[in-house]
Image 1 (cartoon, rainbow, N blue to C red):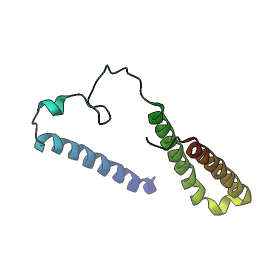
Image 2: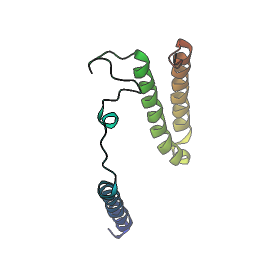
Image 3: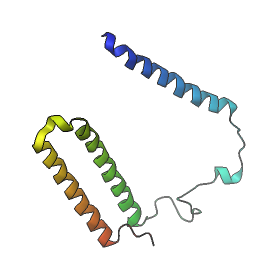
Length: 117
């Protein structure tokens, strides 16, 4: 159990630092309220309709692409760490994963999902 002490110290330090920074920002921060600060903010536009209005599909496409590439990075880190232990099968399976992801990205690009007009 002694080898887990650095992890415990790191977690305690992170909690103390984050709670301290949050508390300090509440105590020291300015509390000036003005109409622009208290108004509703929607994606850089002035609110013009009710909150249940329809958004364009491109917002969702960009969000989905962001999630897909985050997941790619999550899968690449353990693969890179265990690169020498997984052998040829692990290498080829990751290459297949990246090829499928690249094909999906090129498809989205050709369909114009990345054009922000």
